[in-house]
Length: 440
Image (cartoon, rainbow, N blue to C red; front, side, top):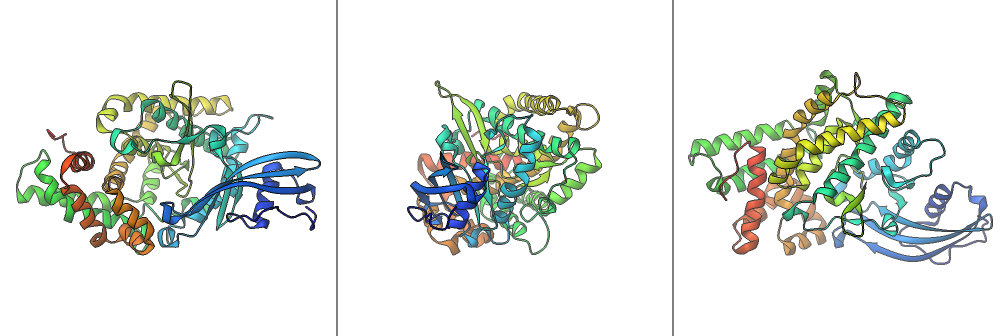
């Protein structure tokens, strides 16, 4: 773009060099070919609104070699260091969009097949401080309804999300085993689900164990189907400590390799709020796309699958549908690979090997669920205050003295909301501790 050509309006989301780089990547052109750029509507959100970073969408009109293009961009900027410091999550998402996703897209696409959102939003820029991608809301995608915590995600949304995971995992298998790609070593460096001393992830889950043992179990035990004795309460506390002491992805990788499993690029943060869905005229989910790759890692693919189903559904749903969903996920995974020239069903990753991997990750996924469900169902006013106070929000993750009293107050609340919160938390406690459902 000639120096005399200026963006018509300044952007609060992108510096001009960042905007130029994103446009050039989106349109596969050099900057010299860009004749003009014009910014249209912009929408912004910030940490005070509940986001983990400054983010927003923007429309860009570009003229390249005499041809007009309109781009719809979604932008995320790192500015919530009180939350992400130590997790390295923002830099990891930049790595995903800058380096990993293009390799996955290359392995996934067949011939001159046009780009699609099968593996996630199209990547336009990824750095240590900003990521830019296609704004899929302009294609009719939207977030999952925010009542999923209480009611669970509907069957079609779960089904399509597992299909989106199968596409991501299949692209990774194709890249590694068909094309010989070696992904950046950073995806093997774990800062979140880890037991390494001094790492923020360890503090987060030690805090979760403290909250369960010191603030929840002493009152929740009365509602659980267990002997009502001090010895039983202590047994449940000891079991909780043991479970959280095993939350370590590095150890999981070693067990997976020893058992003949595979590691793939995984989303790593498989919650319903990290999925966009497109619905048909009847309101049924017909396609799902994974977003927010801040925890992307090489890991057993079963970790994404079991984590999403555990986090997004209630126990009765899982008891009824999980076996069929696991079979369907594997068939999709194998089918996507086979269509692109890789047969995984015999030696590489059979269904039996996948199901053995599912069993290895179940405990980890249940522990992750029990760590976060007491937070997700918290009082709205309390959570809004935490969003507006960065220091308190950071301590809420890593200090049981901050999180525990809030969780205890929510658990003891009267009325319908208190009853609903207790049922919700108790269900995850029962699952993580291997207890039968209580009468309540």
